[in-house]
Length: 334
Image 1 (spheres, helix red, strand yellow):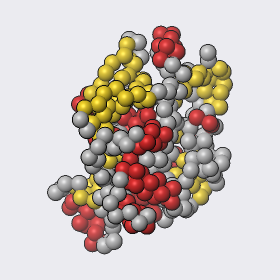
Image 2 (cartoon, one colour):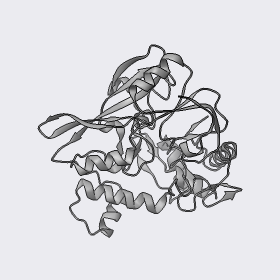
Image 3 (tube, one colour):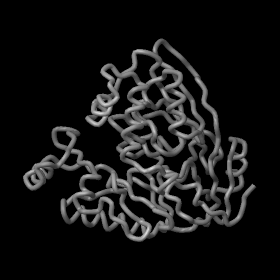
Image 4 (cartoon, one colour):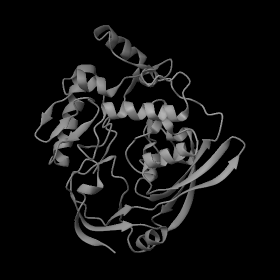
């Protein structure tokens, strides 16, 4: 089942040519259970959209490619949809929209697979996974048993979950169930970018499909296609800082964009910070910062993970020096 010395370039969206000493494609739960019964030190790759590989991988690597979407329950104006971990995230969102199920439309065109979406609590344009999350099933590697996690078990935070922290490496998510609206949809169009795009589309009373189309248009205008230029989407988290710190920065940078999180906390767009430090569009060999979105680090062709990580650390140092803000990486580093 395992192949030896396999390049992982095609299995990570940065296109890093790291090698796996042992590699297997997993297409069913039975296959996964069989592998876990024999190997406990596995490295799991799903969509490879939120990882930067800086080294070859000695542990056995499995690529989770399980498929399947099913409607598991329906009550009044709500539905519960279960999706296998190996399904492509955007294709799953489009499937929901084709059935007029609402809740995930603001998360259109986010790269990666369904199984990793709760790990990162992916989010965009005012919506996060936790807003529509019902439960997930995960295989405990040590015991080989399937366990169910509800929202309260997942400890969701901003781009965080228990699977990135306390339970990191202990479970493999095999399916995720979402609670979605079947009618009377809530339209999340509060972000200015969405409002502007809807105007361009001539839409005054948007549907969930209109929101999805607007989000897709925005993302395509700002973000590079990983199939054309290696990237992992947003590389850094948008920092949340004390209001007192923000007010000091505002005196020096009156134009600083911001979002109110609470009475005492303000969120600053990380891309703006990176751009203000002069990195937008900069290129260092084949590692660089995208010309349209400073939040995105890119591999133009043959950059190594180490080169991209070095660039990321330089950006962090520059932001710290200029703004006294610690910029956290959103991407997982190996």
